Length: 622
Image (cartoon, rainbow, N blue to C red; front, side, top):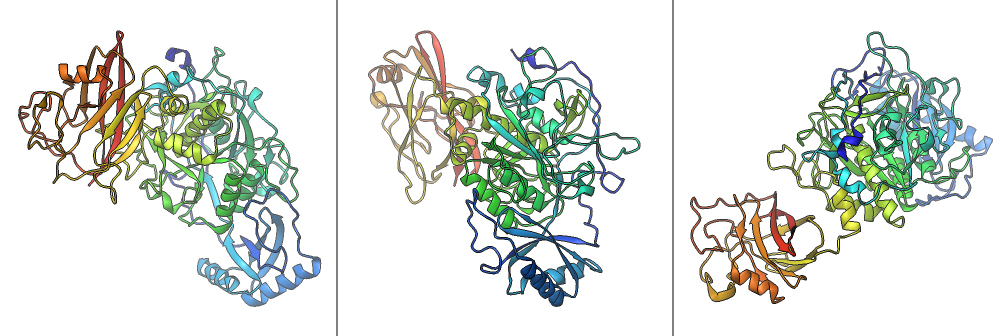
């Protein structure tokens, strides 16, 4: 099955430039040029718009009257000594203004402080710029390793045995779309949300045509069409003997153009784009007739910036409207909490990993409160390490970056919604995060850097639709931890692997449990024990193993007799010293399991000639 999805097309990666030169490295950290600066202002209640409804699905926008507009602008100009011009209304009952006459960056900061202190203003923020999180190079090798390889892949071939997806709407809030033979049947009516005709580079401002237009030709490089590459990973015409595969074969793409290949995109346009994609009302824009269930944000702020009030509010509103927000961690090799939208609440943040499942050298990172999960992003534009998807001229290209990691997760969300269309954003977060695959032992990723694990389509879908073939009930000691130390919690393991569970226990104390037959019941160092109960009437053989053991321990006759009697079987494995099956000391003695690491306990059962594997994954916390 896997060979079906290999691509035989060799492609060239096309790139873009800001200010006629391309940044060497992963982040486009050019200083925003001074001159006219665009800002977002929300006026105080009563002056123009009244209170803010964070679930603003419609309603009216009570815009400033002509007199109020002049009065406010005069007040702002008197307060700052700078020219202030009203640009437009935007989603969330806020307005976009331009400030002119600035001398330098400090002057802009001083002006923002003066505006903040005005009684008429509820808050003001820079209408800062975001750009695509992709880094250029050249591609070669035509295989989508990121879908199927066991080390860093998404485990998609097995997932496709469960579902290949249905017409779930996924909004790609990005640079727009390109006509492509492998995508044309997937495109829903979108919108070009870029309000500046210059930035849009297509001859006008906002309109109903979100087509991605060619950037300036960069000598020695070429052109980049970012949005179609991202969309092609979410979905593309698949299993059609042409091109490449998408994560969800059945999903549909809602293209929302907010980024220009010339100069990125303003935060106000991005906010309006997110709102429109979720089906919320945006002033001056027709209502979206295909509200998205998933919104893909493969973009990040150019410079470090907190999640400003308006972008947090639109993410809250989109989430409340039922849209699952998936955001790239960013490509600056720094904390993901430094870049929006990854640092906004309710963004499901995706870090990038290499083909070897290490943290991609560019990927932003963070603990479990900053990064949710990792997905393949590649590390260069060769076929050996690039992510292969659609190009802008009916071709196929390799790109890499967290822009490429993010649509893997958006596509997975679409697969899950294909099975249960009523899943909420929070349920999707839990399914994908809790059913991620642990990082390989040698990986540079762990839960302090790259999220809960590697996004795994098969595990997430199996958790949603568990295999009823064999149920194993497992109990572990010292769960879930303070203030409930020494408590026991039961887990039903329907599939090969469990979610990752925080597992607390003390190395200094033991749990002395009597094994069947009364052997080895005194004084052992049983820091970790597990009990299982199996719903099958006849277990023919079994073995069990912990990640800190070198090899499985075979069940003895007492284990089998107890299991087949329907009773709880104690099959503990020690973190050091004693082999519970033989009562003999391990040689050499087992080392202690390091704290704050992913570990697992696994039982293998033979029932009616079939081998079933059930694994409990947990993170040891001291």
